Image 1 (cartoon, rainbow, N blue to C red):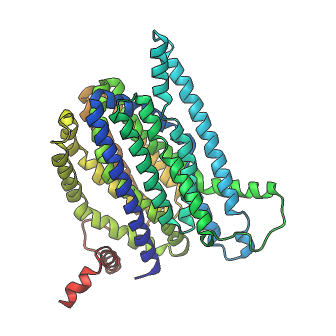
Image 2: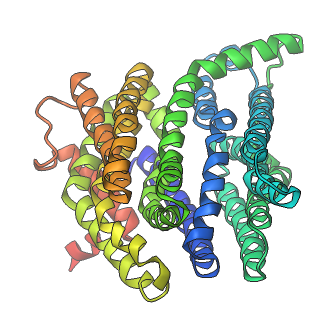
Length: 474
């Protein structure tokens, strides 16, 4: 098995553990919320979260993948002086400064809009309660800034295991605190504040890991260039934004897509309907997050393959699209069917939400296809095409969301969700074919090519502990 495939599978395994663990913890949290709070109060909580999550656009700025891409580009330069045109530590400082600034602005905006929403209410206690509820999740913005910056650097420095461990522990602590408060009948604002703290705990653990395993932190200044700090900052920022700008725009689009549906459901249909949709969309997030986590794991290696061996991208994407076309829809149906049957006796007040799950199947399948196709475009740094296809899909989504929500209520929200995912998948496939990244003869329903078959066999051997080889021996 090639080293690049081994690295992809190793990172995918770690990130899959991370997603299953964190998704499992968040799933337990959502079940606890649903049983303890009920549909209307849950709708209030998830809608307050959704408003704050929009502010993540100003915090993330696409910097996580942009940081990895920038460091990877410098890593590939052959001349030592070329690699030293900036230092990784300067990039970390600049990214963290930008993110904290964005978090501060988003927090101030949340306070301002919260004030506008409560100023006409009667009674100081009611105003205070609503104001705190609206901004209680805002500390998450600062926690996210620190956690994501440190995680991106840790992934680049091959400390994925540490980052995964820190993330799981941080979420475990915050989930335990939030459920304890919900069990004791605490206010929504107190519950949201507790849930926002996970990123801080994760960041502390990662920093401790950097101290314990310093050998993994490669020193960039072996050949120290004599220059002032202004030179370093200029080179660090210019190098970062060269790769970060498309991630910023795409992240903004995906963040709005993942939150605005909840806002529309709650404000147009009421908080009880919003609570039903909030539970359904978080169940659907399980298969979506698994695909996203594998993409995050693939991203550093795809950047290296796209830089050094771009011809391998066609093999990777050809094999994955054919594999998903054969089995993806079936897996999505089975997964949602199992979740429905597990949750039905546990959450009697959310039967409406559980009956919505089958309607998400087309969107889940399309998102899986898109997620792995778009990875090849990121690896080849086709930034303009990536931004344009996301913009087109998002335009269709914004047009259909209010219209379908008013006409078909929650089914309209889900239909809009599916339309966006399907547009992303179709446009990604079109761009891959038009740019000849995939051969013109490629069809997802055709047999694997010899190279694609080798890739799939290597992947399955690694994942299933060489079962194919044992079968051949027998």
